[in-house]
Length: 379
Image 1 (cartoon, rainbow, N blue to C red):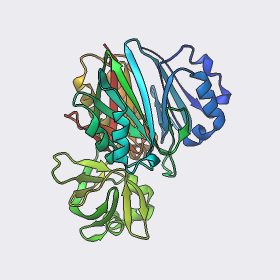
Image 2 (spheres, rainbow, N blue to C red):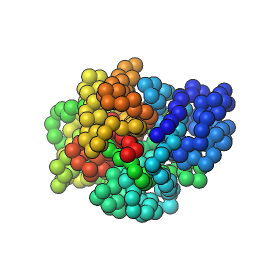
Image 3 (cartoon, rainbow, N blue to C red):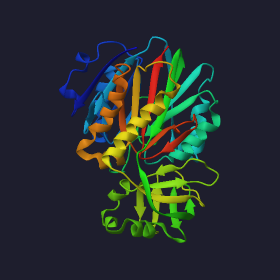
């Protein structure tokens, strides 16, 4: 595997991309600030530079490139494979009645023979991430892994952009890249958050909109749990997610609030909030989040036979808000772990939701507030 990588501050017309990317590449990862990616000139420059390549990308809440964490940047990682074939498909969420149906249709478009992994980049505000993953899992065979993330827009929660297979940066796009051939892919996810306070029960919800907790309006209850920090909503919601344990599920998941509605006192989350589920508030600190990034590395390497060539990181914007000016530390934790094994290429983004298996299973779920890692190694 060969690669070239650079992170660009500002519009691409300030640079000559051919100075940085001098080959024909199989796969190009583009992660960047929403306003930069909305610029038609930047879009045209990217399309012109990487003609003939499969390009995957989205708007983000921050970009990983090597050891750098960018903001208001465009990160580009271009990769040439020797033994791997790629296939890209995408769908528009508005064409389907549900995110689950969109996921089923998208995965059904892939030929399963010799398919090893599917990497997903999805719109982060219009798509119900947990239903999307449920639909994709319904179609995927047991031997095919799945990972990815939901696009971001800094932390504005206004709109997100994903690049379609037709080469258009749009809202509502769900993009999938399938890996075929002599390639090994392993994934892992970990958080570093601690639950606190009393357990509460969800008593009214619809999909990812939560209306009542213990029979009380959800927003009112959440404000009571936060105390003085409730004055900082909706921003404070990213710092205090909910730990959710659904009925008949052994493993809990973390859910981040994407929006609040004062009119009906509801909370909107990145994934489903089923009635009867148990929830508790969560909090974290820098040390725990850095340790969580290390644990994600351990989880991700469990199914690899040797050191990886590429690591794609998808970390939650809430982690970035906690880490603040120490945000580089979770990237350093990943790089330090893999530098002991190999000089792995690191790329990725801060997201509104992460898709990866549980720590010790192959079962993909939507997570929030985690560091998820997809490791790729050609055999």
